[in-house]
Image (cartoon, rainbow, N blue to C red; front, side, top):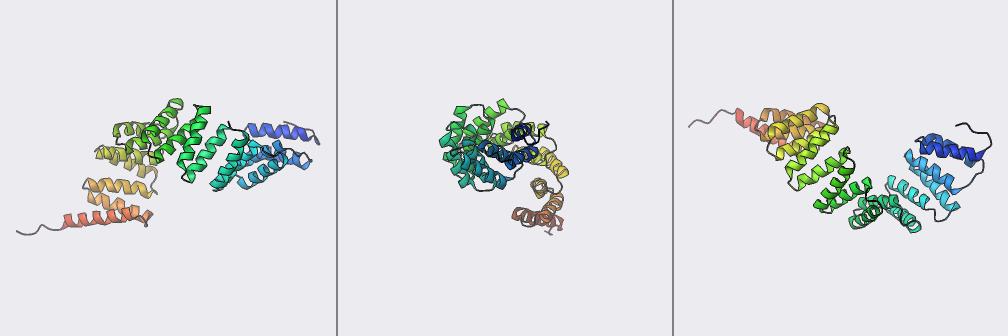
Length: 303
């Protein structure tokens, strides 16, 4: 889009267009040009603040949202945006305060409710997080992020059936979201519903067969179902996909150990220790496996 030199409003229009079409860097440049031409309006700083957020430039975003609030007191969008930037900087309590100010000005701001719920969750205030998520879903029952986050909050609160219900609702609405199968599969496993967990683990692997962590999770479920061969196959796949992962070597080494394959266990567990010397589980099991191997190599005592 071409602009006429000296026409600030055209720069603002192009900045809005660039922001809406996923070009935040260009939007920032055009908002800056308009501001340099002495156009001072809250929505311009709001727009540039949102563009900075998109680029994870949180400090600059905070400065712009703060300026927007100076120009227009009670600007709900500025409070929400500044809260998001504060949360990104690891300041959840300050973020909660800003989200509260946003909601005071605009009580039906669904995004602010979800963002505040995430901030509450990060400070382990799960009851308030749940209340905000309930309110957001009352406004929009199909809010996938709210469903996913509420599932996670319910899981942390020990409301496991509620968590499964939320993840299941989200899966019905978006059956291609791997995170939902991973989360629900984990809750199924916690509640010892292993066949259901395995179905979710299978689906996650189908959706992303290059993710080593998904094979580790499914291998663990196979282990709990007593299928050590399939567990070993998945752990081997994880090792192949991520040979620098100590968790992959530990998982396969543990499976070898409990299958009585001590030579293979020692090799894998020692590799896990090399990759993560501080892991006491790997070190302890490696020593136990070596002890079993040494014991097996001793000649039998004479009668």
